[in-house]
Image (tube, rainbow, N blue to C red; front, side, top):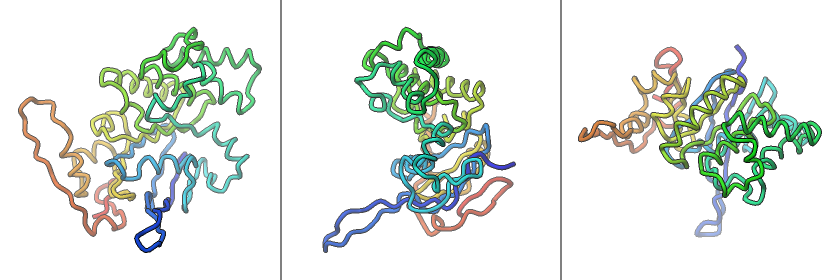
Length: 292
């Protein structure tokens, strides 16, 4: 089956500034990353802060321009599209940002925020767009009357629902979920996750799910890739990754998951890095790849 999204040898370098002797350099945030996502799948991307997972997600959508590599959507390399072609492609490629407090324009009302993609892509009359906004707000569990409110009048969970409504306004097929619940209260996180899963079923969405909450990733993702210092060091079906991790860094990550049993001591595994981090992925079990 042809993947909906296929990322091949993705690289992203950032300028590192001027050094001690006036020399400028680069920092490689994403280093030869390759993976594919099937239609309808939730593909998890995990790793500690600074591992490159958010940069990878943004490179896939060209919110950050990659240094090199390929990103194929429906077998078309989006990195080769012109600005006009990319704008058309964005109807199918959307993102839900991590922080619902900074990702919404504080001066725009909720209805205008959700309507904005429809205006940019010149879809529908004004009346049709307003009807679509009411429909979208209802789909994400908000009252259509909330369209006249400003972001500051909503809770964090409600703001993230507005972000979701904006993301699905154009009927996309692929959505990058960039730590979509990490900025929310624990009591609200489950509601937003359940909404994401419901929207996936109702609208046939495919997700790239970026997160650091490993228990959540195990719950929602079909397959998971583990990133360390810009590279994927392990990739496997979710249950296989959690029950039989092969790479030392993955084992260290999993050992840090908090226990729900009071008084139970964690057997933490330290990981200092090594030569295996630069190795090519190889199959250690069916569908299970690791840099070992």
